[in-house]
Amino acid sequence: MSEPKYGLLSGDALQLIADRAVDSFEVEAQAFLSSRDKPSIRSGSLVNKLQKFFKDDDLAKALASQLVALAVMSRIERRSVEVVCADIISSLKYNSVDEKAQAWFEQKASVFTSLTSSDDVKLVAKTLHLGTDFPKLFTNAFILTDIRPIFDKTREAIAGGIVTQSIKIHYLSSEEGSDSHEITLSLDDDDIEKLLKELQKAKKKSKVAAKFVKSSLGENGFVLGEDSYGFS
Image 1 (cartoon, rainbow, N blue to C red):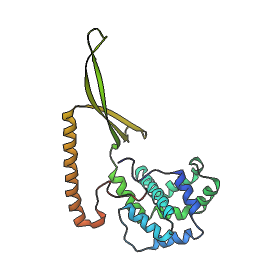
Image 2: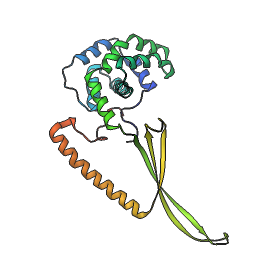
Image 3: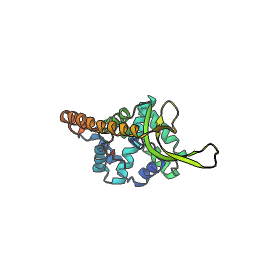
């Protein structure tokens, strides 16, 4: 995955929520919370449900991403949603959120906390957290191809050249800090063929496993990365 799909808290998204929310926000939130629709593990379904009640696509996506991020933070840090939300709201001035938006969140703190605590949000948060709860999380990779000259013993002429390959893997690590890390491994043509074969086998196994899971659970069974996550 290119980034952790549950997203991170975003000052821009929080600002958008405060800017786009209308006077009936609390009424719409209560209608959402009172809905008897069965919660789904898919974040795309959460976005659709928020769109249904708040009637604003951008607001729904921003709400979904930030509510899930808060709920995931609560799970990881083993702190109550109430405490996490209170801490975030009190620190909004450090997240590029203007004073008007800060005041809005302070006024709507209890509603925002209730939304974060809802089964709809917590189920998506649990799913995305479990799907990315590994010591190291892949984010990207590049294969670099180089031509290295071979000099003769005088170092005055090139006797030949060799093509080399290396793969640079970028990852996040809970063991090495929150910043992105990378590791570079050398490859030859045989290694690349092995990688291709393993990736093809992985795709086949994923399809078989997904078919098995979906036959029992319907839309509440999917392959990590298959869901759009609703935030893009």
